Amino acid sequence: MEAVEVQYKNAAIDGNYSLNDFADAYLGGVPEGTVNLTATDGFEKTESASAFFANYLLLENNQQMEGAPRSWSPEVGEGMNTKFLDLAVIGGNAVYFGAQTPVGELLAAAGLNADNYKFVASDGYEVEIPAAAIPSGTILWDAEKKMMRADFTDGSLTDNQKKVKYLISVEVVK
Image 1: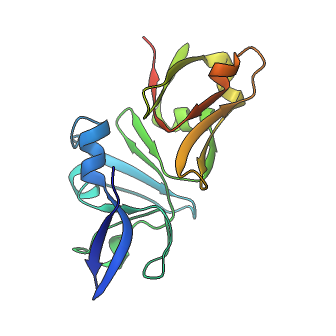
Image 2: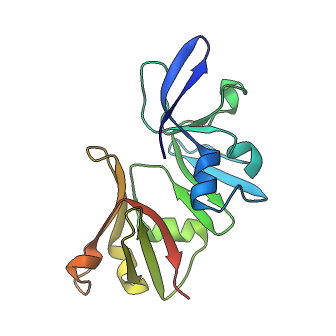
């Protein structure tokens, strides 16, 4: 996905990503129902999926706008923005926007429970991780490389299982 510039209050806001494009690319389109949003400052709200995915996502603060990660739209007032967005849960999907979280907490927030999970990277890499190793995992934002990744410390995993760069999804293995 490419960042876009959005005009807002006579300023060009750089570094925005269309949540609608995200839904098309990774969720097969905008899902039905509601989205439960959680921010790092403790703020929580529920909004329709259609309203949420009509917004942009600002991943990093810039001179024009702060509060990143931030879900926002130039069509709605600032009070409707979700600043410091950490997690969006849509049905059985959780989208993590924060800097770092234990894998187990993220899976629990999404209501996912399985014997094995498949971690998928944007470069096509996939690896299965057993549930027993999940507590040793962390999902984090690599600011230098501008990517999400998962790191595991469980000694039973192979070296190929311990790091997943360019992480885009975690799925239940059936």
